[in-house]
Amino acid sequence: MKLSTSVCLATTAASVGAFAPLALRSSSSHTVLRVSNDAKAAAASTPLDLAADFDDVGPEDVLAGDPASDAKTGQAEVVLVGCGAPNRGMGWYHAVQMLEGRCPSASLDYIVEPWFLGGGASGPGGPEFKEWADASTSKYGTVFGTAIGDLPAPAQPRCALISGRTADNPRLFTECIAAKCSTIFLEKPGAPTVTELQGMKDEAEAAGVGVLMGYNKNVCKYVRKTREFAETVTGSHVTFVSNNAYENTPESLGECFERNAEGMLKNMAIHELALLVSFYDVTVENIESVTADKEFSSMQTLPGPSGKEFTDFDKIKFTIKTKTGKEVSVAADRCGGTDSYATVTDAEGSEVFRYWMPDEEDRANVEKLTETYPTAMPYFFTQDPDYVTVKEIVAKHTVTGEEAEGVATIGVAVETLRVAEFLTPTLMEQLK
Image (cartoon, rainbow, N blue to C red):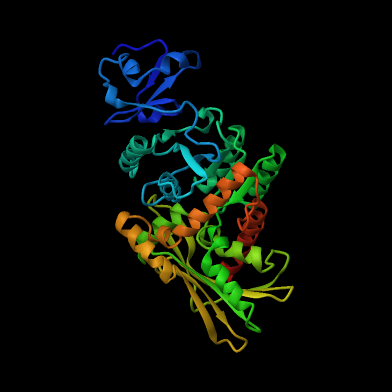
């Protein structure tokens, strides 16, 4: 193969780490053409000219793109960090929504996926990721890489959406700040520990970077309607119920426990804890009591795919009373189905209101999405409109600086994680 002195070629999946203005995709691996800064004038010529440098590359294989970003004026240049597996990773579903143009203020220009473009390329999920990445590049011009540090300078206000493994988030967070992200959208819970998340908050404040959280239930219709109704009922009590649709088998739950090793209260139920912090004055210092519902709740120790054992709740229900006189309950069930809801009971304990997510208005959308992505996690679809809402608010905030109304800040996330760390051992002890 003849190689131009202005272009260097990276050919293995493990070596993909450069974000380039011109990208080639082969059938066997991701291949990135890195164009040096000195050669941009030459590289700015037509795909035919560049393809002539390669004996075995045809003009149809070369995709021309903007050297920095496809984001237009008025759009945030979004970098997705930690995409995860197609149909399973939350990052993947964020990507799908943005690539389909459902968040008009967001342009998803770069996807950083170190695992499936690196060490995990040939393992479970790797081939499926490559197939999806190739299709996304072909259809949308999306640029994939393995390292945040390889990003070019932003052409529009840059927003990083971090949806990686919780344990990796502190490092990824620091790298996103260095990559000149003006806003970071951090998926829950943000970090493994309160200490790490507080450090990230301090780091962002020192750098002048805004940090907003992916607590989409803060803007959910069912939450708003439940809270509004509860205000009309004297002595009302609200219970937030969250369900997932894992199979109730040791294999399925063991895989879930290992993949979400931070535990249910820092993972699935963290959204409900954020509601309690945001709307019910719940803080560690303000908790008067917490009581587990032992009849509903279940805790198991199960081996994950690695063979290592993990102890976690497969379902939990508890009631918190605060020192300021508020009382609220949360129930979460890994195997409870696809829908979440909230209830309001009156002073006598009779249920007087229940609102589901999705409601009847949204079920048609769920059915359509299920047909389109039949193997995806069902909870993606029940919360689909809320994921769109949160990302659009964050993207618009990145561009205009206007308040991200309703979206949880990293300050709320720190307190939410504090509550999770307080509740987990307390509830586990009650269930022994």
